[in-house]
Image (cartoon, rainbow, N blue to C red; front, side):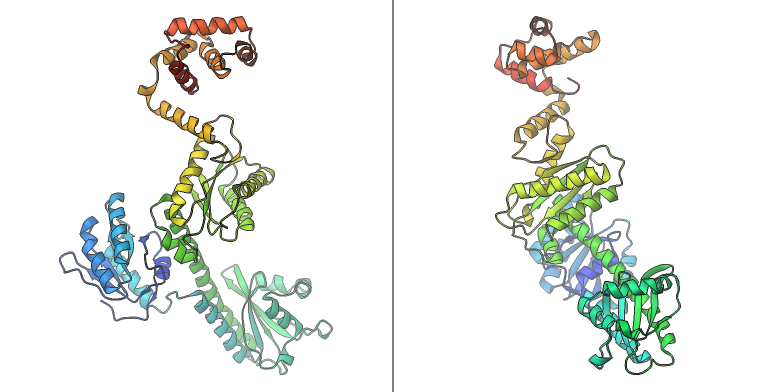
Length: 530
């Protein structure tokens, strides 16, 4: 056991370890519980734990890990990590972890315990352990203030889009020029000034060089003299550090200080990008787990600050035979959905893309959501040349019912994929009959013993002799026995249709006067192989 450390939130331990090593199974107390140390629990030792510990339950698989979970819950440990032999074990352990109030992590089977132990300890106690977004911002503000002291100027740190990330404190307001003042107030450089900097070649220099550039004063524009340097990771631009001269000239070593500051800033921004990427991965893991029903709602709700008991809906999208990039399709769906619902979450699963709309207004009409989905379908057609199908799952009362909403969206997409006349955008209420018939046909397709062998013989006869008896019978049934209507659909004479129906009855022995046989024929003759 290590010497207790200040600890880091569980979410950041998960971000740093990453999905290749561990996967979150339950977090009943949320993801902000502090992890202070790591403990290894040998299967032959009594099940014990301490507050804030990550307990590595080595050698305890399945129900053998239950004592460790209960002991961890009693001691208010942060989490228990176990290896699972199968999905059935996960359900039992998730339930036990939830009851005990302790987080449960499943460890990949191929992961070595000593490797996980060493990594977790380094993350918890190491100087580069991630903490919070505010801490990262604080690092940049501290760097800006330090750089201001070393250069004798007024410092701001910006990203590649000229958005202000951090800035130093100004000793006197009259030392701040218009560019600095407007940038701080708007958290982004004003366009008229930015266009001048582009015109003077400043941005081109910052993108392509590691050297400091000086920008001369322009009193007519309200600009004082300043130095700038690009923040780069190799050849990749990450941002810029600006030092504006105040009432006194900059320090003689200002350029050297800027070079050092840019290198420190690069390390911090790279770390921030990695942490943001890890946060995105964690969000995706929790979202996919919720959609699939393998992770409870509380973990995602806590991670993103969602209300777990407000209405939610799942939209499902499927592309039809497209060569378009999946990233392009996913990006389009993401942008259009986010424009309509601030909290929308997106997860590609297999060949489909799902959008979770949480925290919906209680009385949001399904027609509104249908309109949002139609916008996405039309944009995919117009901008990407992609045909999308969109299914609207049921609006459920909370995040716990999200898997049911996703299942309903899947039912609609499955029916759309089987063919037939279906709209491109639909809720179940729009296509209830079509979905139920499609699911019945799928059952008949899978279960040969449910089919009438006489109807199978009829389609086999057509295949061997090039006749159209089955097609004619189905058209006659769809027309409710109206010979002229069915004959018009088939473009044949009514007497030809009458002959074909009689011939089908003679060859197979089916009696289409019987309601049950008519019903079965209407279904079975719709099968692709019928």
